[in-house]
Amino acid sequence: MKFTQTAEPAVEKPLIIAAMQDMGNVGNIVIDFLNKSKNTAAFRRADSTELSYVLDKGGHIEIPKEGWNYKYSQNIIIFGGGSGQPKTSEELHELCQDVINVAKKYSVKFIYTVGGFHTQRIIREEPKTYVTTTSQDLSKQLEKMGISMTPAKSVITGFNGLILGYAKLNDIYGIGLYGEIDEPSIPQYRTAKSVVKTLEKMTYQNFGSTQELDSMASEVDKKLRSGWKVD
Image (cartoon, helix red, strand yellow):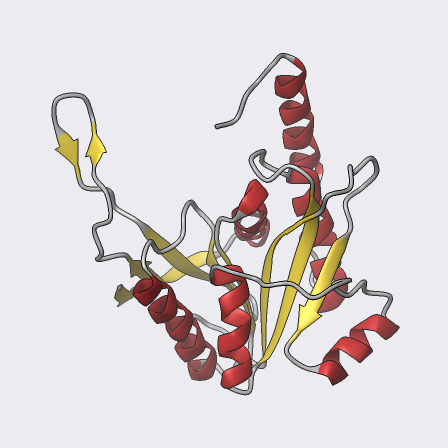
């Protein structure tokens, strides 16, 4: 990975929200929404230096450029979003460590991540958001707030799980918010909305209107009714 610092963020003991594209696109939908809501400014970039594929543009190839931004607003740092995750385990671990380095540099006490929680039940109402943390004491405090904790043991893979492990190893509180999805191949905007609302409650932040997420969810519903297929 190549890391480039482009500015110095004006933050004081901020919280970090970091997530990448995952099933149902929940992670990147939430991050992209938060960046727009908070009108964040970029200050650091992570670029992949590993070539795992090329793009055939029809008679010629192009080298893909994959990278993710750190952005900030008042006392909040947001990382990730966009599309994809690192293609190699080495880059994934390098990226997680960089988030930790940034957290330590700016005296971050809490790292939040978000993503999808695949369920076998058909979601007929608003999706639920489940939470897991790096501390049993913290989990108990959140339960007292009425937060639903993850209901069973599971393995959380990719950046949106691994970053919690890195937080725990570095004595930083890590909190994962995972919204219910029943179809991983379809963008899950209602699930993203559920995660955003839960994140608001836990961080005491105001992320503004979620009408845009409602509209995108309705657009997906419309496409599905017309026979839209997602690869």
